[in-house]
Image 1: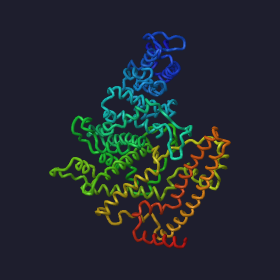
Image 2: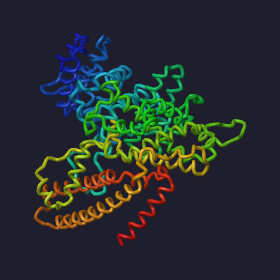
Image 3: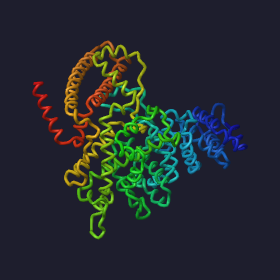
Image 4: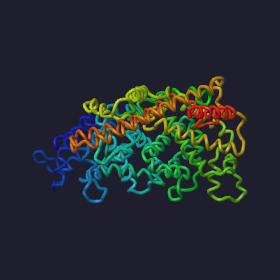
Length: 609
């Protein structure tokens, strides 16, 4: 280590040019000798055999980044991707202090040029997206990099001014990219479900230590989230392309927070809606409200305009784009090609839909129909003025509902076309295997390799499920439809989607779907009862109690129950799309047709009795 430190000081340019190998060597030494760091050591003292003092490691680490050369950013990039990911860097003392166990991270945070570090990571994200660093294939390493990066940012601001988190464009870009590359469950450390027991722990669970978790949790702060759009007010003279790119970055950040912290989703939406607090803004904010900011970006997106023109276009936009949705590395910015742009546009649209749903919940009819027109001559409460500012003009609400009904119709009617090949294969296999007993499946599957979880994806946006988008679109459509029912502002027949149906045979098709649905539900009920009986018999068997085989069998049973539930849901959606639409968005079908269908259902029930 002493020789390495000496050479780095003598030839800084060559060292920075070969920074990958340099920092990998330091990382290996730091990790292996971390147990000796607590021992007293002279400043820059010579290490004994097999030991390296903390100060020497820090000096050697900083050496290529102290001298500004043509390869300085290269050194910062390699430092971030190979050294900031080592586990020992984020370990903590037993005390409640957030200070790392060895003080190295604090020393680095004090000496690293944070602006150059951020610039290096942003540049890397826009080009190779970490593909040159195998260290970042593992999710835990990317989480450690994210935790250290946030810590450096907080350290620069003396752990104050949380609004500075989201007001720095480069910080938003790096954090959102790293967050979007991580599986949702990495914060909690495990995947929770209703059937999971405490003693069962799938080996694919991901966990992070308390230090990294604390840094990521610090992002969920009212001043930070509320100030997300504060930087956009300073870009009034920016080009249209720059504004669109900025909106995508901010949407990436906002959606990542909503995705990672679903339990605090309402708080995050409210903070975005309220905007900067008085303590986090230097003066009156002139930026657009969050709703209108993201609405402008939404209506200018190719996804929005294509689906508005043709509901069938939503099929290709909703499909997962290629691999990379499993719990592993996904390159969100590998190339600024069409696929990446579509993913970013989906994030903008989904953030807008989240916010607009929240606004409609707190907006009364008078504020909704005001269309954003504010009479400043009248004295109104501040809250009323804010809701009026966030109200969209009725003409734009019409354009929004056209997009939503085309998207919502496709989500239900073409569910089988949108599902990925893996989902269809899984569904078919599960349904065809319903007749097998769970004990037979247990014998055949205990020897099979453990299945790896597949993270849901919508339009290439990992972590989002089709059910989530369905619920979001359906809920928003119903809320607008209720407003239109109370006070008509949309054209006659605006809500109908009869052009996508063969209305001549629509009623017989719905009746046939209902019969098929009843038959499948009866078969499923029988299979569920058989599975429950097998589970009781298996739990009562004494020969396997207390063995690892028992735990593995229980885990497989739990995974099978989840798979069967999902398979039944997907299959029913595929065989009964018209029923799904009638149940969730009946206003797509003419009222007289719905009455006739109801009469047919009554007749069908009477015959079955």
